[in-house]
Image 1 (cartoon, rainbow, N blue to C red):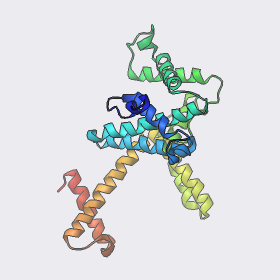
Image 2: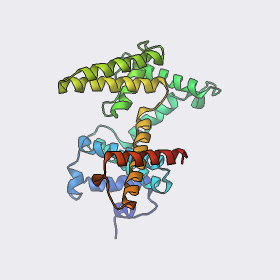
Image 3: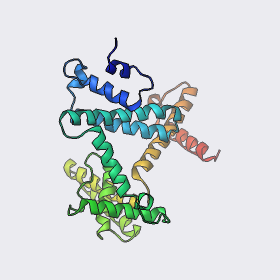
Image 4: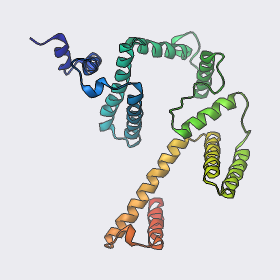
Length: 269
């Protein structure tokens, strides 16, 4: 007769309890999977980041048929980390769920408390940030900005934190001037180490310009990557129609095809 655990593991309607039991079984030190048993928070963290990006990718591509599976992969990461936390006596799945529930209730007094919900989205964002600041208490202005964030995203978050205490340029004009200054400093350097530092400074100021323009720099760069991919693939297709390939073509030929692809996208042709 199958055990209660086996029944749950093979129950197609078992939902979250089924997934948690599967993870518990995978991590069982005696009967689990050797690969899963040897993992720790550090070794799993890169997979967590990767799965979050795959969820975002499915959404960006409007690949709704894929989103369910990608969300499941991301949920597995939360279950994985909480299982390891339970084994170490650090926290449990329920304590994790309760912690985020408490946070959501505390940060939405206009929904779960007595405050009016007749607020603009901008005002609610300001209230959210004020509540987060109260939760941080006496922590430093920049404390808590996750090191694992994409660099452009982290730059914007650092700048936002600094801006809240008045450390910010008043307009985009000063930011644009700083971009010109950093670009000049970069081109003036010959040493690789200095170029590396100046290039980082330039990217940081460009992220600041994005913040002032209310542009997500990660999203803007993803869009630019997608545009480059589309146009270069159009160049490759045009060359293939001629019986050739990029490596066999001149830069002038590819530039002309690039301009044609660009014009076609804009409806100029």
